[in-house]
Amino acid sequence: GSVLGSAWDGIFEWIDSGIQAGVEVVRNTTERLINWAQGEGFVTNTEKAIFELGKIVATQAALMEFGTLEAESILKDFYKDSRDVTDAKVWALKQSGYDTTVLESDIAKRRQKLEEKSQRTVLKDESNQSNTKVAGMFDNVIGTLQKGIEWLFGLGKKEWSQEEIKDLTLNLNQGKDGPLKKAIQELIDEGKLEGVKDAVKMAQGGCVYASLYVNLVLSGAKVEDVKDFIERWYKEGAIKNDGTTYQDEIVKAYGFERKQVTDYKEFVKLMSNGNGKLYGVMRFYSTDYNHEHNVNLYYDKEKGGWYVSDVGKSVNHGMKYLDILGKNKKSNFRYFQYLIKS
Image (cartoon, rainbow, N blue to C red; front, side, top):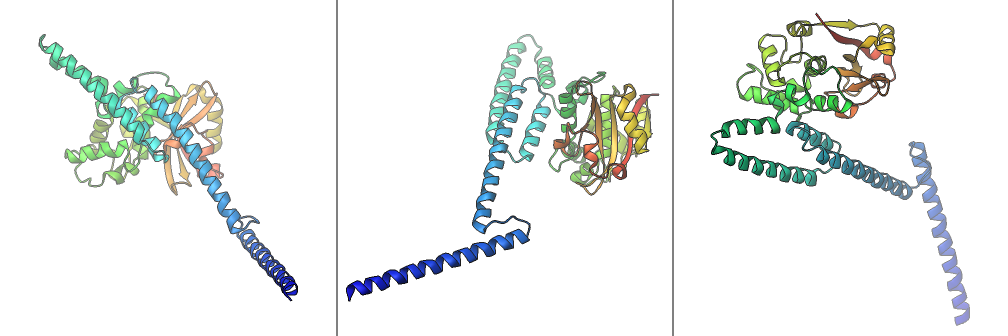
């Protein structure tokens, strides 16, 4: 009797395991069909979760590697770059999702050492009654965006490197916590922009005057620092709160004329030979922003082509000029402009 009972128990266990296996097959097949119909591949939910987890891990690893290299580059250039250039680079890296806590700590330590060194220099020179001059020299070394683009970037140069152009546009980034917003907020706080209450709105609507400023600097115009530039032309009515900019009025004051190309074929032809031009501004319909936007273009002699530098989106720097137009290049294009001496 016990032998027969054991045999039946074995048969029932075999049947039960077979039923469970069958249910598992049906469940997995159903999940695969549902996921396939939704365009997610012929996979089960478990397999999909494992795949998604793998993508997240890979993305985090790539970001960590990219961020580490960028952080090392920022520290390498620390003593060469101005304070605002360094801050702008850190800000851009932070926007990419990289944790900049350690990097910012290292920068703070280096700046503390510079402060201590400066104080020692000031104390030493006090005996020669020249501490005021030394403090002024230190201010120039530390620099800020408000001290002027002229010192930061060597105003009047005929040609600029890709990195210098990138630094210039980073220092005018339109982000809600970016350098352009901070400059405008300071002007508001100082009572120099009557009627302006929202610095973020004015900055994010300012791609025309910001890219124009960059183009003036690259073209060698003796333009003031960006705060004075905005204050001057806001008071004169050439820059409005909503970003409306009367460009011809502005460039004329610096001894330039603005030439504009609106035909797409003529634009492409101009870009193909350059005609000796190195810098300009392109306006186009941006599918990222869902509105029109201005970006700076520069000619890279080493690569032999035109590239983008964007005050609106730092990741666009170095992009080929046609790529930023998207799929519908001709319909998205609005105009290209460049400056010539009047």
